[in-house]
Length: 102
Length: 160
Image (tube, rainbow over all chains, first blue to last red):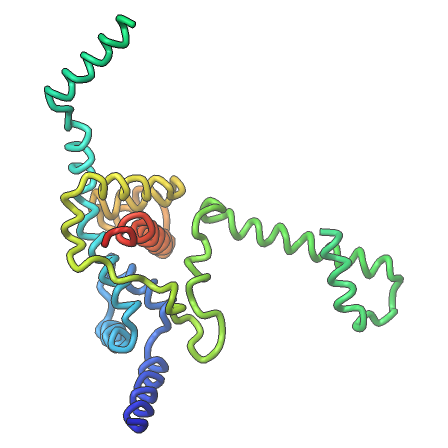
């Protein structure tokens, strides 16, 4: 068991030494959405994801936002076009009338 | 700043060689402090608003040691819901998205909208805004980083 732990630690340290650190990885994750990275950089990034769940998540989140963002304009437009239901409008009119008569 | 000068003088008192009068030594330190201040200020404002995350989340990375530049585990990106795509149908999500992107400084928001919302190619944006590609990439990196963090705090972190 101890041997396994030691081997795991060695593997993590080795991979860490051979890949960019997380701050650099976050920069690369963004950059790769604008310009495809070289094969060497892609391999290094893959290797880093094997030992770092945070960078893997970061990259997933960025890709998600990158794919979602083009919908922003449409979604906001439909939201502003949404109107109240007829019943809700009637309720408001009634309340206003009641308030007016007081 | 004068206080800082005295502090620096106290700390570095031993290195004072006595070649000059104490007064001119102190004034020398003060001059350096003033230069540092403006150098720092110009560096920070040259790019973007001061309030923006201009440190590129450096507070979330390990500052030194063998794993320098690695995510501080407790502050690293969280696992978003198993199906973040479901949020795309929610009006509240898009409102949060919009609010988050509105918090960015204007120049960063402009670049972000052009690239991510309107899908304009990098080269095209550089030509239109007359900026270098490197400059554009730094701005996009900051925008995405800030947006990711803002949505995690205000949306995904709150979903169960």
